[in-house]
Length: 123
Image 1 (cartoon, one colour):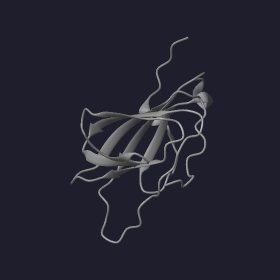
Image 2 (image 1 turned 45 degrees about the horizontal axis):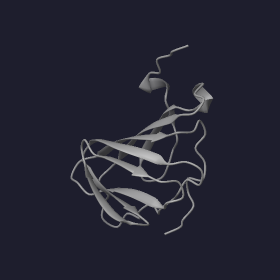
Image 3 (image 1 turned 90 degrees about the horizontal axis):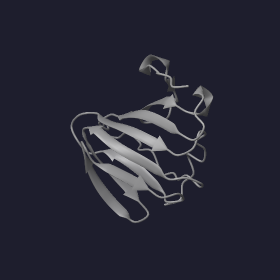
Image 4 (image 1 turned 90 degrees about the vertical axis):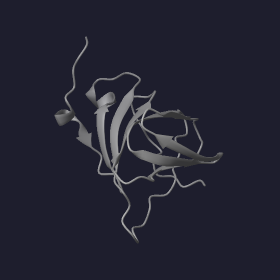
């Protein structure tokens, strides 16, 4: 049965250095999808930055809604602007940073109902 999920019903994940709202996941009835709305603010001088992580068993697809940033991966640095999408293979370490002057807004899709292995440094 189709369902509409309001952003007001999204779960705030409380991840460091960003606001991450889980809109769709197994906890909300999804069988094989997780969707997150992520806001990465402009870094403040002297602020410690989040380290890279990876997902062992599934890829991540990130779509840039607004702002500009850079995703650093095992294979290099990938500048991003609104309208860009980056596909990160399973097991590849990555971190996305805001490189602009306004918040970086992202939609992050995972082809799994349960996202795990989020904070494992590998790079």
